[in-house]
Figure 1: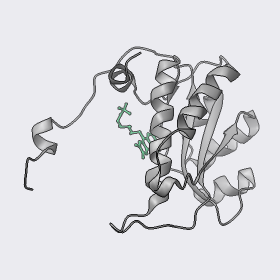
Figure 2: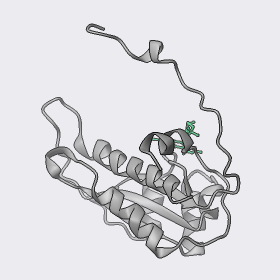
Figure 3: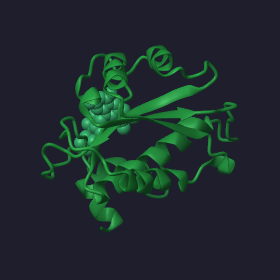
Figure 4: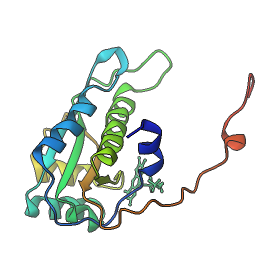
Length: 170
Ligand SMILES: Cc1cc2nc3c(=O)[nH]c(=O)nc-3n(C[C@H](O)[C@H](O)[C@H](O)COP(=O)(O)O)c2cc1C
């Protein structure tokens, strides 16, 4: 699959089949995250792979009760082991770097016939308690992953290029 086709096909999947994900596919997907770029090559991302149904349902509760999160066969809990490094542009590195790695995950998941959804609506403390994550670690996103119940391609509601691109000056 071409990258542009994976980008066009990816959508937020909020309904999953029970079908388990093959280990080989998960390894391919996690390796794509491992290969992502990061500021100063810090690679502060850490991933917890959660498949236990009881933990998944607790994570769904921690995700403000978004029950579909717990219905995916796996939830990737994207964390950062970080010293809060800030780039000279003033931006914090780890949220950007973890997001790049997760975007690799979403695109390779599509290539593998899988669907994902970014989950930013969650209570970090509850996620930490559920998975015994140490205090100094940040939880950046949750990402349920599985075979989509509806694999059809959906229309993307996006601003036009004219609205988001400027040339030479603001
Ligand atoms: C950082 C981030 C956080 C998000 N958090 C949630 C969430 O908590 N729950 C949810 O259902 N969707 C969440 N989304 C999905 C967005 O709603 C979705 O990406 C957007 O509406 C565009 O739709 P698409 O992903 O199908 O193209 C999140 C997306 C991003 C990038």
